[in-house]
Image 1 (cartoon, rainbow, N blue to C red):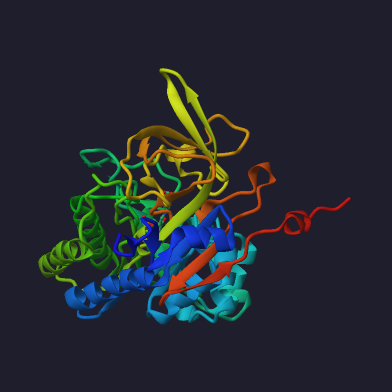
Image 2: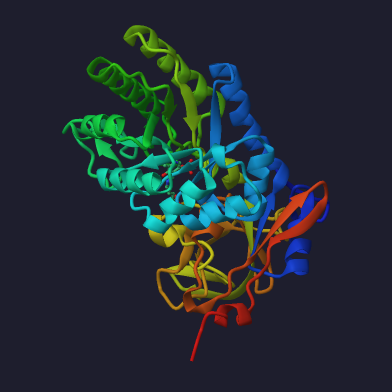
Length: 430
Ligand code: LLP
C-alpha cells in the first residue's frame, strides 16, 4: 500500500514512521493506521462520484469496518456519509456530531431502542430490511409525531462470491426483501400507504471483497428495473439508489483489485444506459465502501515469542495476539501478508504457520506464510489489517484489546487506548 515503506535501518515504516519504534513506544499487539491513506481513499470515492454522477451521490463509509470516534471524525471531515448497523455505531457517530442527515441506518433486526434512537437523532435514512421493521418504524414514528425517511434493502439475487458469479433465483439470505416472490413489491406498496413513512429509494449490497465489476453492473441493472416496475405499478418514481459496498482490496501480492474509478465508471455507464432505456431519471447514487476505505491503511504489530519447529511438518511462530485481535483467519481462512518488521531487507525464506496466543488450535493468522528468519523478540507486521480487525476484536481469554495508533505528518497519536485489566473487570460484579 502507498503508506508503507522501508527506512535506512531496514525497518518497515507506515506514514513515514518506523514500525519497530512504534511497537517499542506503544507496546504490542498494536494496530497502526495511516490517516493520510484513509483520507486518500475517502477522496477517491468522493472524486469518482463527482466525475461519474456529476456529484449527484455520496460515498457513505461503512463504519462496521472500523468504528471509533477518530474514524467517524475523518469520514465526517471528508464529506462522506456513514453506514451504521447498530445503536453503538450510531452513538459513536453522534458523539463526534456526525451530521445525522448523512447517516444510513442498516440492520436486519433493529431493536425498538435502536429505532427510537435513530428517530430521535433524525438519521438521514433508515434502511428497512423487512415488514416487521416497517410497521414498527411507522408506529414508533407516529407516536413521536415524526415521519421516517426510508430505503428498502432488496435482495437482487446476485451471488458475487462464487468464482463465476451467478444470478440465483432467490438467494438464501437473512438480509432484505426478495424480488421474485413479490415480497419487495408488496413492501413498497405498503410503505407508500403508511402515513409516517417516506419511501425515498432502494438499497442492495451484494457481498464483500469482490474483484469483479460485472456483479456490480448486474445489481445496478436489477435495481433500476425494479424502480421502473414500481413506477409502472404505483406511479411513484424512487430517486435514490444505494448500491452498497464490497470493493475488494489487496491483502497479498497476487490480489488484483479493480481501481475504484473503473468500478465507478462501469457501473455509472450501466446506470445511465438503464435509466435511458427505462425512462427513469438518474437517481441519487449512494455507495458504501468499508474495507476499501480503511483496510490498506492499517497494519498490526506483534512481538514474536515462541518459535516451534515440528520437523517435516511445520514451524509455528507465535505472536502476542491472534484471533482476539484478528479473527479473520479462523472465520474465513483469509489471507494476509506478513513480514518481520525489523528485518525487511532479509530474504523471506522461512515458511511458517503464524499462531496466536489463545487457547485454541485454530488460533492462527495464516499458514504457509513466507517471512524473514524470525526470532523471539522480533516485531512482526501483518499488513492490510485496517478493516474488520479492531472492529471484530474480542476479549477471548480475557486478552485486553490492543491500542489503535493513528499516524499523520510524521507524528503518532493514540486514538483508542489499550484496554487495561481494570477495564476488563469494570462490568464484573460479585
Ligand atoms: N453496506 C452494507 C449493507 C454491508 O453489509 C457492508 C458489509 C458494507 C456496506 C461494506 O462492505 P465492504 O465495502 O467493507 O466490503 N467481516 C467480514 C466482512 C463483512 C462485511 C459485511 N457487510 C470480513 O472481515 O471480511
